[in-house]
Each structure stands twice: as C-alpha cells, then as structure tokens.
Length: 167
Length: 293
Image 1 (cartoon, rainbow over the protein chains, first blue to last red):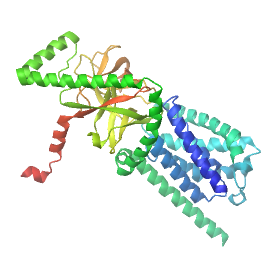
Image 2: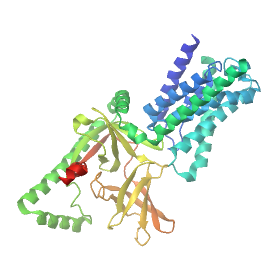
Image 3: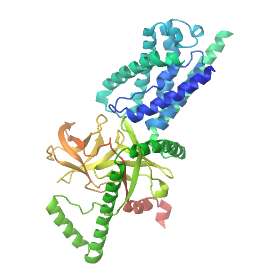
Image 4: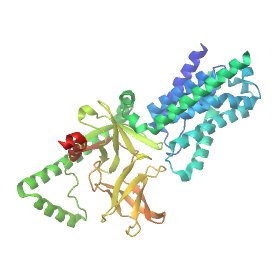
C-alpha cells in the first residue's frame, strides 16, 4: 500500500515534469524540475542503495523523455539520493538508525524542510551545471543561484500545499 | 557484529553510487553517439507518439494548414529553381547560368548561383520542439522510410533550424540550433569572410558570429547568411541581422546576431539533402586496401 503511494507519486512527478518542459519556457538557463523533490519525499526507511537506484532510473527517464542529454539528470539525482540521509542527519542531529519513516519527522519545523530542499537542489544544480559544461561560463553563478532559489521555492510550496496531504 | 555489517553496507552504497555516477557521466560525454542508437530510436518513437497527439490538438486550434500550404509552396519553388537551373545548363551550358546568376546578383546584391544546386528538400512536421534548456532538440515526423539519413541540415524559409543526429523508421531527432553544442558556418553579406555561428545559450532570438577577422568591416544591420562551406546547408540562406560586436582575445570579432527564425513557432521544416555529400561519403568509405587496387 505504502509503495503504491510512491509509485503514483513518481508518475505524477514525471507528468508534472512533462508539462513543465512543454509549457514553461521562461529563460533557457532556468531549469525547473520537480524530480529531486520526489527523491526527497521518499521514505527514509528505504535503503540508501535502493534510493540511489531509483534516483538514477528516474533521472534516466527524465533525460530520455524530456531533457535531450542522457545522464545529466541521472548523475545529479544520484548525488542527491546519496547525500539525502546525510542532510537529514545534519538537520535532525539523529543517527541514521533513529530516523523516522519519512520527512514527516521534520514536518513540524518548516524551516528544516526548507533547508533540506535547499541543500538537495543546491547539490543537484552544482553537478547539473558543471556537467552541462559548455553553457556560458559568465553566467555560471547567476544560473546556479537562480535555479536553486526558484526550484527551492516551488519545491517547498509543493511540499507544504500538496505532497504533505497526498502522502 | 552490527558495526561491520553497517560498514559493509555503507561501502556497498558508496561503490554503487560511484558506478552509477560514472555511467551517467559517460552517457553525458557520449550523448550524441547514444542519440543515434537503436534504443534511443525506440524511446523517440514512444516520445513522438505522445507528442504527436499533443501537436495534433494544437494544429486543430491554429492556422497550421495555412503554414503547411506555404511551406509546400516554398519547397516547390526551391525545386522549380533547381529544375530551371538544370534546364539552362542542359540547353545553354554552365556559362549561361553563370551569366544569368551574375545578372540576378547585380539586381539583388546577392549571389544565388549555388543556392539550391545539388540539394533535395523534404518537408517535415515538427512533433516536438524544446526551447527551454541549453540543449534543445526537435523530433520531426520523417524518418529513414522517407529517405532521411543522419547529418542532414534542417531549415525553414526564415533560417537554420538544426542538424539531424538520430534517425528512426518514422521519426528523426534534430539537434536544434538552440543547443550549446551546435555550431554552423556563416558569413556576413557582401563579404567572403566566414565565421562560426553559435547560439548564445541565453536568449532564443540571439546568436553570436565568431572568428571574424578584425579588419573586416561589419555594420549593425548587415545580414548574416549560411556560408555554404559545409554539406549541411546551401549557401546564402539568410539567418539573421548583425548587431553590436566585441573583440575576442584581441584577434577577432564576436558579433551579436538577431535571428530571423522564431523558434517559438516551428510547425513545418525542410530537411536539406545534399546529393554531393552522398558521393563524397562513398569516396570517404573507400578503405586503403580498396584504394591500392
């Protein structure tokens, strides 16, 4: 039952990404993505090895279906998945064995959820922009900042308004 | 007992992470090669099927039919132009064609001798056109069954659209000009100097013409054309208008170009097939052993 919920969430994330890719074209260096948010909301009880594999597969699907460069999202999402528990441990000061079932454990403190999303999007975009490579180097920092700020705000709003209720 | 198990698990997770990262980075660095694979062709077929429904819905609510008619007319005009040239060459020789072309050049200020010579044109509909990222692409509804092969240029009457990098049976993958990896050869009107034109990665209406020598005089408002130096595009297709320039490394000019092509509204495109290329490719494929014979 629990896993079905997250499979549905994965489909919804991919559909949202598809719609964003088709209809939201604000500025080419700005990449709006909800897939890292899906990795963040997966239960903490899920083994990290599974989390890494799921992140890689979701990234590869995103690359093949929407992005046009195979591996770009896959590499960045895998990094987010690998570091997710580390971020949560830093934010909760718990050891990994004490972590609760999901980020619900952070739920009463919105600032911690916000920081988790902020850290996750930061590592996602550091790798994404580095691998994107040939993009104008002059706007590297602006691009990073803009992407992290916009995506964190969207991610936080989605988490508060919708995902929390759905899961 | 618990600690070694945990350490073992962490080590396994770390290696899994490293392996998947390496796979992903290899995929990124060899992206163009992977786009041409059978697996990606299958993915594109699924993609194209989904986007075809969306495109059909869009067509229903807009003036696509008019665009199609106009594109067909344009293709016919290009073909007619070819036929006229062949007719003149057959009846009156190359010199007469040269003479007529010079006459046209005198009247229009533009040499059109080689504009469509040796090129075939295939009209295609755009199924998907991304323009929101640094590595945009298009999917068109023509594939190998329509005579499409890799490395063909894609244009519209308004300029260059991209180059075909992957071909399936019914659909093809076009690396858009709005892709930071795409570079084409271009020239400034009334000049024989060529440079490389590439998208600036920021605005979908702007590109930069690079490697133009400092001594070449360029004025804002000059038209930029395809050079015809590559096998992808015929020469003298207008691409955009030159704007301001800056000096790069003290040796060449980088010129800002406002593109004629509006990538927001791409419905039909023309695939350009260079007939000379087929012959040259076949020569290139001759192995040294064959050559020695």
